[in-house]
Image (tube, rainbow, N blue to C red; front, top):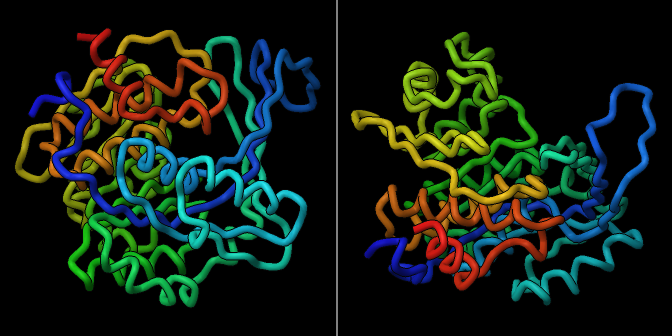
Length: 328
């Protein structure tokens, strides 16, 4: 099956997402602010978000059955979570309520589509091993378990331990970035990082890696040493996303795969990485060969950058099929 000709999955997989729910605020500005500077914004958007929610919504719109854990607080922002899950076709049982604030974030996007952002985890930081263990049977029934770092190490380590004990593959996107604990990395089957995160890994592991967005960073050879070190730490697959330069995929004893970015006019790059990861997860869990899963992932990321915001921009199968037909 060729991804260019169809976006039907080989099978509609069941994914479990250790998530995060965040009320995401984004401002559009001519350029990113400097320290101490106030700028006039051309637009301002408030929407349900968080890397975990984005992964869950992105996968669901591609046809996957999605379950998971999302933490919310008991403040006014928490009331936005239930309707967001309803709109996305996600089960309300994903929500776990704690006392205290719901997660929230703010992002800036400049005239070129580049962005920067900060996230306060709120209730997401309180999701721990006990809540994960309570969902162990649901986790074990999934085809792939996904986690990101808006959840804490305790929760990530526990869900990956349960998944691997049940023979289920795991995918980690360590963003917002911190170096994963060795046990987490050992239980990670698929590691997805962007160029900035790859450089941080390289510095921490004392392994050569290119400066983000340098010309060298588009070359597979520049990441080979880092990919080798990461593969030796546990993952079977390391994927490095490079924005407009596409993505690279590394497996042990295989040549690197290069996935070019699909040509679109970028309006807002917030959420592009989450859309890419959701597409990659659905493709691999649904039985696609890696090159096809990478192209599906690239199409999902390209769909998102054409629009302001993330929640409504995460594509369904029809949107992905239309973009791939245009790119053919």
